[in-house]
Image (cartoon, rainbow, N blue to C red; front, side):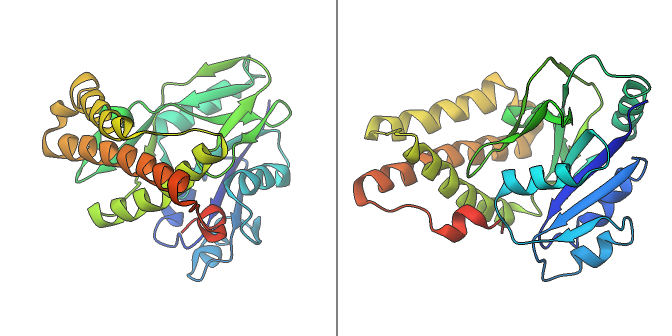
Length: 261
């Protein structure tokens, strides 16, 4: 019966790490790779597992692949500190690993808690994330932002949800948008992508219609409207920064690329 290692990468996640590790305490092994937190993240993590390594931040992809390489088991469930494994998901994974799973990677639906409610609409849901994988056939890939697992073999989906607590409040949401759009724009710029003034108008408008109307943000009242607007703002800011990089030659700093906060 395959055993499971749950991996978490962290930096200054003292407010989140306890709940994340408690939700994964059923796993055979917990591994935390911390990027020199200045709060109590590492010491809190050591209450749950001796497998806590503090190392320099080398980017999301390298940190997550390093955590998987530390594991004593081949099956990996990668979660972030602001995520929680639900009882339904843990039960489903344990049943799946009662024998050798037929696929090499599994996507899980992720639901986000925002402004006092679970958002099951907009681009935020079901937000399938490939987080359960056999490291012999899969690994994280990507560059600056939006890393993902690349699998050599079949991929399937689970039904149990991964709960996500992405933002403390709107202010934190806006700060995160600013940081991630810099990384996303830099990645687009390096890929040779360009944007014109028409695109700066059309792409954010299309994102709002998709989120609020086509993907049901309207059903979630005020929070659904705000998520739709801020998802549209994300698109605007990403392409505005790409436009700026193209015309003014400005790109993200090394800190923007390498540092998670």
